[in-house]
Length: 147
Image 1: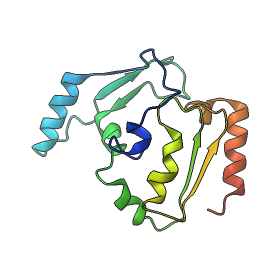
Image 2: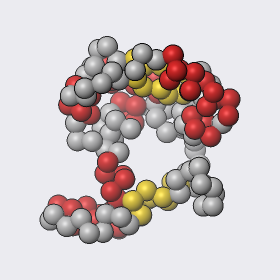
Image 3: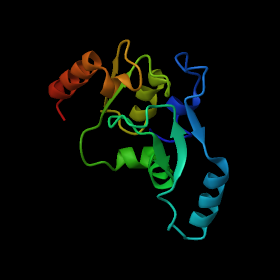
Image 4: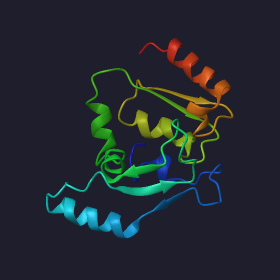
């Protein structure tokens, strides 16, 4: 996640699902954002988004806390990428339902021209970690990477 203002998040995504897959707790999000603006972070552990997943599956995240959601939304992803001291490799599936993966290359290379961006054909968002065949392809990419 490069942030809610980055192209992979904002551009049209042909693989986005029509059904609801996440439910934000809007009043809590607003309240915690106001508290954060006042410097109060005591409640950042509270869940603010629930996902349509099996709650007892240890391999998926059923909720995001305010702290986790905030960490996934950097203020300036270009700044973070430019100031990263290690090589950058982005792996995404071409059928990602969450992010318009065909926009990663442009978004990342604007800050890191040497970044390695690999789109894995036919793989969806959660497939990257849950589908055994997709996971083999992901680990193969990592093993073949110069990072």
